[in-house]
Image 1: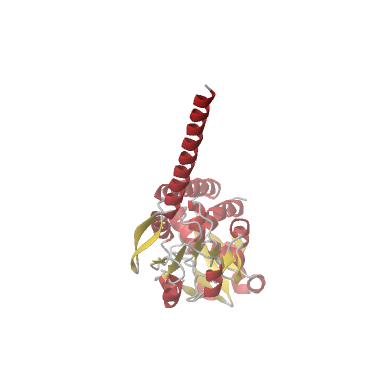
Image 2 (image 1 turned 120 degrees about the vertical axis):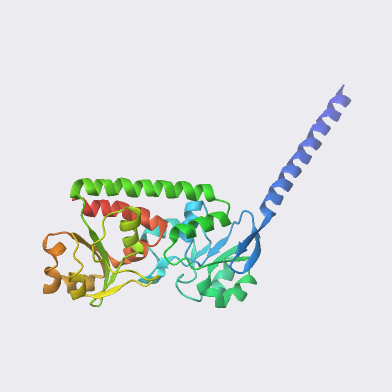
Length: 310
């Protein structure tokens, strides 16, 4: 009887060992699985489930939404390109900064140190493509200009997370409309003008950044004579030109120095929205860059609600 029991026990132990080995093998195989994706540079084989992504394309906020924290990033503040934007520090604080995504080159040595299994870059950095592809599989994204939704969709497709991206976009659009409706309920069908003040000139957000949020996402009214935007370049007007774009509300993104200069200007004081007390100042950092990125946009919706419904 003891012999039979010993045989049975041995068999159970052997089966457990084999089962454990099989499970470990399956997990290892899953981690080592590859798939081929189409990129600007043609077909590229990438890990099916990358663990150490370096992003220099400006897609780091998208990656966070999709459930990936990059080991290295170039999503820094445009006004402080060696630092993360304040609203991202708790989310990207563990990521190594290897440059600013609007630049055409990066800290290649820093990228190597992070031992990536996937690198995501943009066409803007094409001159370092050959260096990067010797480090890890590289996906080069096209230039999306102001099409942040298209970029999110493509990055999600690249990583097999289309459902996550679609759900986030649906929730963002609902939030944008809900807040817009609250603003309209409080202020009626007023128009809004958003500009970046810089050394006496004004860059008008006609179809980009925070302006695109207001007009395209929230569907609030544009001023009748809003300048048209070509590509990624923001239309530029002088202070006198700004005074001629008649709007019920004016939102100005500015440094402290530019804000002080404006507040001392008689021309600025005589703009209708300013005279009526409908001017909102936002700090250039982080709000300029924040208006271009998805997590930043969502946070800005709450700020716009707070500032415009008083």
